[in-house]
Length: 435
Ligand code: AMP
Image (cartoon, rainbow, N blue to C red; front, top):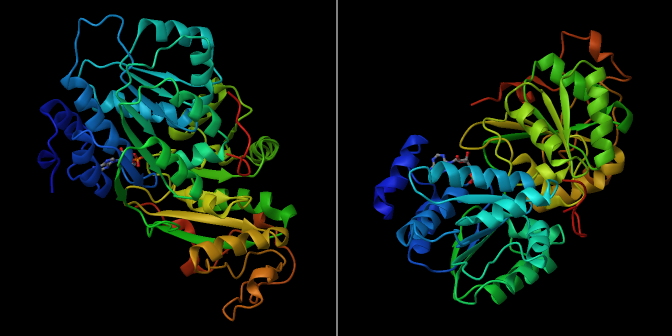
């Protein structure tokens, strides 16, 4: 089926064609006609499914239909709430891209940048606001923005927003919106609190279910390296250097850990940057740009980068620390293997974290393959492997540590398990993030 059959106008079809998209993704096929009809949606869709275009295209079409150029300043007619600043700017870019042949305007409202500049922009008016809930609430309290003309509200990555403690802000924002509106809720998972939110803000929604819950993409090959905490950094530098990896997204648990690993990698000769919630917005944007443009090889990030980030053709994700919450494993490794390309996800797991691996494998309902010979002294992942016959993780390992930096002949990992072929934020937060 082609985009032509979805009822989109020429201006949008042309923008889609400019992007080189020939076929709508499943979420686009299901969501676009429903949104065009003005109905509410409750969509279970993960990132990488094309959901941004899935809601942006029909939204733009509906807004363009009743566009009145004489309205000055422009009134906010659509509000898109997202969990992170990075996702906000990504959604904003998509709106610009798909709406390039339309006269509509959009603004990004996120924390970490001057509130005064945003206030000025909001006063000038715009049709669409893409915002993180915290900063938008600040603007609402100070009456910088009027949301009483909003026709469509979109909650993107709703489960992540709730994880980050944004529910009170979302509830507050709701009180500024008209009751009669279209509401679209997108969430990768559907836990009870999301269902409760959906019940209270959606009106007779059409349910759209796309990706299997708790599933990883087939395009991502996964490996576990059982390795002691002390040796992780050296192994990481070795893997990057010896395989000549050019773009590696490395997840760590804490902001401090991200800064520390960034410095250590730089010392090892790896071009590295870090991304976490304590950085200024300018520093976060710069780190991401350097990484996307290939000027930096390793981006060390907290789970702030686990959701939504779209890094074109990212080949490698490394879990330097496993996530505290098993679902975040799926989101993290979903940064690679996108749009049908292949990707590799490697997790460095120390004995202390074996219980986290156990929780992840329980969620996935399968065991992730182990690298038999890590080149380091075998460690025990016993708490999860003990009961499994197939757990021969460290059986063939050589004793004692090898010096990887002078060890060029043999790469860690058996040949058939090597991740090198592939090319085709923080523990889960329950408190509000920085605004
Ligand atoms: P999203 O899930 O919205 O983050 O989108 C994931 C990626 O898929 C983005 O890089 C989009 O540009 C891309 N994309 C969206 N729709 C299509 C499509 N119909 N065909 C090919 N790529 C698409």
